[in-house]
Length: 321
Image 1 (cartoon, rainbow, N blue to C red):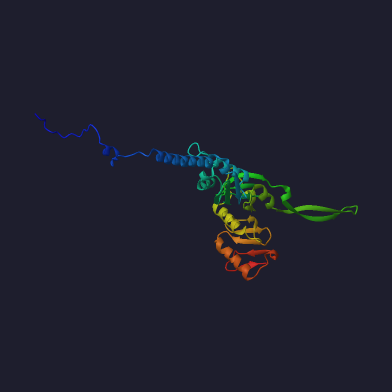
Image 2 (cartoon, helix red, strand yellow):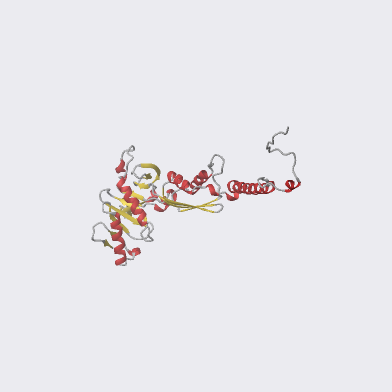
């Protein structure tokens, strides 16, 4: 009896034609091409790592030169040390802060403004090793002279520090000479001190203690008889001194030498280094007085080197001699 025919996928063998045919659904792995791609990307990655290493850690790409301009009152070495301090802070725990690409200029600006009296500062990097800082200082003190000693005052008029005593050489004495005849007929001269004028050593003070406004208070020590009294001038007076100083210091002929103060409620006399003395008001707007000064100098073509004074206290009239 014949067995029924059953379909089965199993084949005991393949004919000659089947052996030579290629299965269109089979996938062949190209191991050679894949290895080349891996080596290529590995080379790129290693090159990138080496490049970053050199940029971060090699001293050629570290800030090594610091150029600072504009300092007059702040100590140059102390200022540069502060810059080095912030550069040496580690970034992300282990990366060198002095690396050119890691130096944050805004961070340096904020740090220095917090530590020093700075009005404006510009920080720039120059590849690969230079850091340039352009500084405009903010006046934080006034040098106060009462005829006995020089001292720093802060922006509120408080005494901060005694600088030094006023020496005898800084007083010009005036004498009256009289004569008398002795019984022997000899004429004898008598020299009597009748007054003295204070000579403010503004050149020495600026050189030793900084380019600050210097004010000679003619009221002298009577203005602060008690040693415990720390406030010597009003805050408004300090601000006026600083504003006049900053507005005039760029003038070639009207750069201020020192200020003479007789009364905080009235006027101020400004002695200039080369030109005339200026008599100004402590209560009128300074901008307007400066404008009046510039106007009269330009319109009248005043030769400031041959004028004794300019009086701005009685607007709209201006007097000079």
